Length: 219
Image (tube, rainbow, N blue to C red; front, top):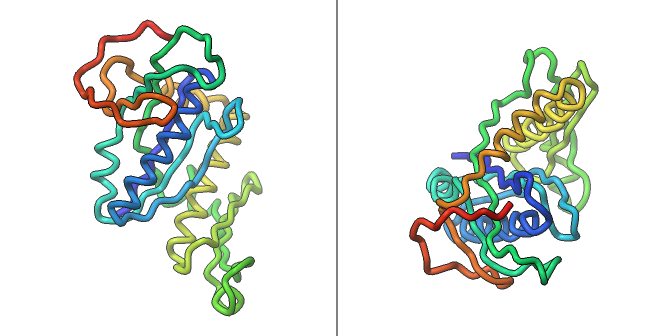
């Protein structure tokens, strides 16, 4: 089973982007401990090194839905800003939402050209002799995406199509503005005061408090 999960800082500052990066690390760690395969599919860099405005992860395996359910919602971090140590705010929030990707990007299947090719880079004879890499091209825009990480052509096809969808949505956002509006709707839906996970300190340790927190006025 495959699940796509988006971790978003919403319209939060650099501190929230820092939390996105830490949450991604923890989620990936938990998925691997459950013998699940997880990939860092897409990210939008934040304002500081090592931070992200949003991260898109793909999780594969029988336990993927359970991981998704445990993390979906708001994550709260309690701590002093790593960038503004004198800032009074101590509560920072990010949102985690499932993302549903169809097998092809928006539009007609006839608009998508899928090609197989030999993978490049490390991999020895397998890479040189087997056409497992996939390039997906959106004909109307000329946008294309390549996936070659997997030894399975089928998995590479799915990854390439998912990546192409992201590119097409970005182009649609640039032209129409609608796709970006929908993503901001997700960002703005971050609920403060009822986190599914709470972490504390720069060590990003799990908080023992899982009770409903009071709504913070921090923005």
